[in-house]
Image 1 (cartoon, helix red, strand yellow):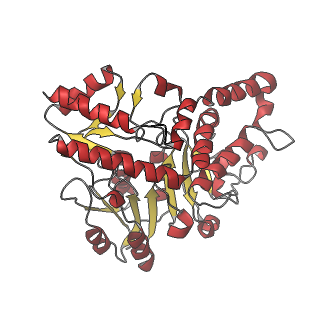
Image 2 (tube, helix red, strand yellow; image 1 turned 180 degrees about the horizontal axis):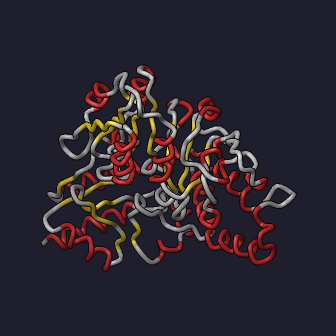
Image 3 (cartoon, helix red, strand yellow; image 1 turned 90 degrees about the horizontal axis):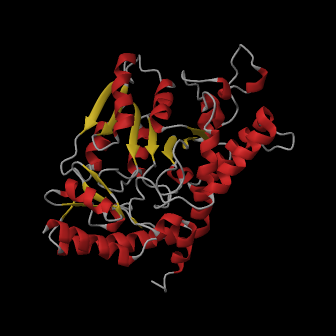
Amino acid sequence: MTNDPLLKWREEFPILSRKTYLINNSLGAMPRKVYEGLKHFADMWNEDGVVAWHYEDGTGWLDDCEKTADLIGSVMGAPPRSVMLHLNVATLTAQVLSSIDFSGKRNRIVYDDMQFTSPHYVCQQWARYGAELHLVKSHDRIGVDVQQLLDAIDERTAIVPISHVYFRSAYLQDVQPIIDKAHKVGAKVLLDVYQSIGTVPFDVTQLNVDFAVGGSVKWVCGGPNVCYLYIRPDLIPTYQPALTGWISHARPFKFEMDFTPHKTAWRAATGTPPVVALYSARPGYDIIKQVGLPAIREKSVRLTSHLVEKALEAGFTVNSPRDPARRGGTVCIDFANAEEAHNELIRRGFVIDYRPGGGIRVSPHFYNTIDECNAIIAQMKELRR
């Protein structure tokens, strides 16, 4: 343990002194500086009231929204002003779909049945606006045959909403061929990076993806309600969603009745942004950038590979890819009565969760130890007996 330089960061996350925290794919451990961030927001509100929206020196809540969006963008290779903040991915998915005309022949939404439920529900509802869903079925509930997805993308396809890492199995998808095929036939790609940002290095500029969505509550150790939309810069001038609002306007505080879209990605902002929440998200992104994604990924592969090995030795079912190159930061471990066992694990101080069809999700991060991974496998073996 003492030879691991990343363990020096443990002291920045108070919960690690009290619990074995291994659910970073669902909610990352809270950085202690979140207290300072939320106090800063409260002090601004208390001292300056409505003036805190924007100070003459270029600070204030709206200014911090833009700075936080750019900070998030820097973690995934996005240029400044190509990312904006919102409350959740469901709304962002709806907004991207609202920018597309589904009334013609190019009306298909193509994706697979391993996506998270929120965007899937939104896509289902878009049938009322002329969208036709084409769902590619998975065979093993771990991943999807990329070739099947590629074959489904054709000139009738309008958009392909896909996940970089699947929430249920931690399958790390090779998204580049999907993006390339979509562009070849004139379709766009909406990439969900919620389960990859902060643990798997990637660059939206290099991928040349059209849109990317995600949030801060998982591997980047931020609080709820700080989600974001990346728009490829060359698409921003023509991005005109039907779902809009006052912050999307070029001059929101002029309160003009004729709408003029913002010149940057903030044309996607809709209504009042998640001001309070952004102050809980920023410390996590700052830490992730300081630690460095290559180091985080190296340790993630090492710990998850160890978990896979020990789980298989114990006779458990592993519902995550064995190949670390195709695995995100989670190992899904299943056995008889695993759902009941997960409740007991939580009672014993092991913070994990359970997903039907996946099992107990164990998600170590850069601040976790191999001893913690061994301990949870030992607890699972005891509970199985």
